[in-house]
Image (cartoon, rainbow, N blue to C red):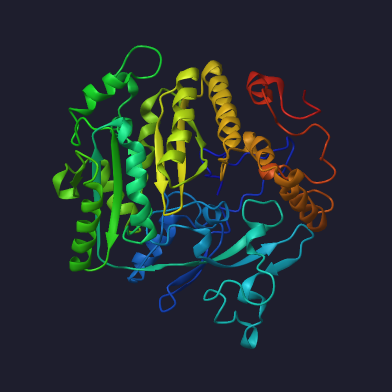
Length: 467
């Protein structure tokens, strides 16, 4: 649908490309199977559309939605996006793909490759992922090997739920919070993939501009954040943990007791429920998202600066305090160097966390765009040098990120190029997506590396014919 915001949107990598709009007409919900708790959708089905259809049919099912519900269910899963119910790993909860290959052939993966009786789809396509033989679905995620035109998705049976937040008073509590989360997540005490946010996000999600809190140039000082946070519902704290538990009332009560006890090891930790906070507080938005209701509230922080646009920096970090602190220190230092406020959101699981940085900048300012690009470049390089790589990135930084995955003399990229050349020998489909170039472009100066991103922002163009 072209709503891959923060990562490049609809933009093709090569000038002169033909952009195929899969959202306008390929927007059918082909099937919702209430007994199987699954659906089959086309690329143009948004989270809002799927939610509304489930409500229309009065089915006891939830979708899993990311922070912003306006995007494509299929597209988000294929780009390995995440949500916040127990079904939050979207690609892990897809089941069955239909793909148009670069030569025009139609392929079904998984059980879909087994013909059904009397020409209809067989009854197991949305029930079992791998089928027989090699499991090929993964090569069509974050790739340019084919166009996915149908996808099965598992849905969550509705259940009781309780959202909450826990606040922590000191910035230096950060590694201890991560250490407390890990066993709770590994033992599956935590009901979902929780978020951990710095208190600056409490200011940003009020939808007020930064100028309401700080009028001077440069990043907002920590003491100013502290001063204004003290007037907000959660008060003068440093970190805010957003979680949700699922089940009946007794099990949720037991889970919350375990969670509150685990975090009590951090002095000053305090748990609050939605009933403890005013209706406009961000926690109420989390209640919706974590119970399968798509919203748009997450975009409120784009009011932070005038003419706001944003980039996401999204490395994967082990769920260990020392690793989290190592990445955090790099991100803090480089944000200060380039003059941006740090707006981090951490999605923390039992073994890894997505450390997602929202770089918000004024898109009317060439200077801010150049600084944002330079900040991205340095964060990519410095975290990779420490062994932490991005799981997803903006189209302009795809080549840089792809090159960081260089183990074995770039064995992974050579493998991807082999598949690309076999499936798409003419190199017609999305050349350069996620750093994968077909043979006719490869080694001819199309990669964007180093300061070439900033040069492109100055109108110098991208690619050998435009330099």
